[in-house]
Image 1 (cartoon, rainbow, N blue to C red):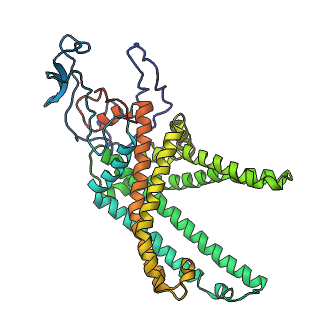
Image 2 (cartoon, rainbow, N blue to C red; image 1 turned 60 degrees about the vertical axis):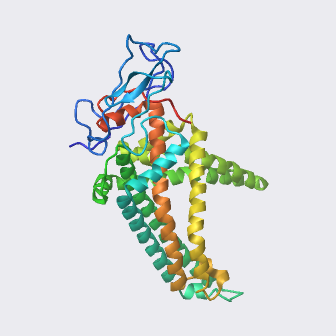
Image 3 (cartoon, helix red, strand yellow; image 1 turned 180 degrees about the horizontal axis):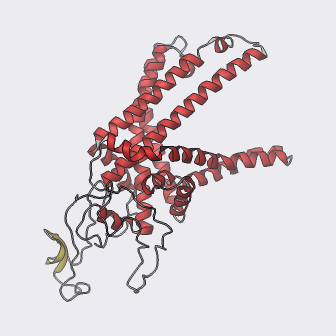
Length: 405
């Protein structure tokens, strides 16, 4: 069975009447071959059978009448009642309703995915957190607790060679930690995005299935992370070098500030590239263009949601890690150097706090990013109709409920 969610190509505008002049266009219909069964991962026979029926005589309900739309056993229909016209509810085969999502629904969908599919989510997040933290502890113990670093302790006048050796050791350890963290982030993003994509359709997925579905795109995702990092840092580097080269030294601070603003703009514009690469099987640069296109026109909304999730993660991880940090201080000879301690006991205690923070943060970050990507495609490309078809709903052309903001 084909498990490919094919690239959607260039979407049609999401505003204006359709070709028949019947209302706002939903955009081109992409992906999911209509002549074949729904692909694995975006298909199945999940969800209720719903359909859309027209009122007697067609058209809108009579003004001031006693009849209204309601959902019955067979779907939406025209029934008697005192409430008049009521907007139909969108289908919800999984963790989100298949319509444009509000901010609260995106956050709730990420949390609901972690709760409803806690076994694969916990296994993936905990396994990756343990791996990356173990590498961090080993690197800190081996390369930050050596003669080169010890030579700088209580040494007011170290030699140039001692400083160079200490810097080399610290740079090597820092590089190893950065690479390990990047690998962990790539693995978590790849596998958890697959879990979220199945959860949207109400389907379960095991860790083995998530790995099998994502492993073929890990190298591309790793390349994407590198390219997004370069693109994000490039404005700051370029403006600082330009300011210094033109002899405008006093304005370097201004260049840094402007560069940081541009870097944030680039980062937000490319923030949906990872789910585009994973779910559409795109290449690195195509996924970056897809993200840029989806974010365009809704930059501030995407920025607000990403900023909100960062603040929530900061609060949650702080609550988790503060107790372990205080406990680690009790086992440190000099609590003032706790952040740079290379003793086994404080390293292990702080590692426990970091693992707990990652177990909470990784699923939430991956879930929000994947659902935000789907929300943007629903709003611009009518992805909700494709998801309804993949979920096995009887009538994927059910008009969705109005957009949520």
